[in-house]
Image (cartoon, rainbow, N blue to C red; front, side):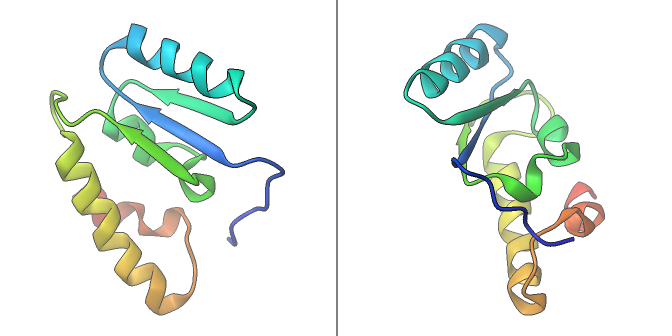
Amino acid sequence: MKRQRIEFPLICIVDDDGSVVEATVSLVESIGYIAKGFRSAEDFLKSPQLPNTDCLILDIRMPSMDGFELQRRLAACAMVALRCDCRHRSCAPSYLH
């Protein structure tokens, strides 16, 4: 699956604090971007928005998987994605383990 082109960049917000997610999504949308919020790194990794995310605003202190671990998993997937010239959810199994 190739990355779908969208008219405006998609900014995803990942934070375990729901009020922070809600406020940040509202702020991002108020300046004209598309925003989607997630309450955990795992929810973001499983989401259909993953391959279309242009920017990620990320909490580094979350229960379960913290922001640093999410970044490491995304970076590991990106190295594979660069070799196959694609960004899609097929990387998910490798960085969910």
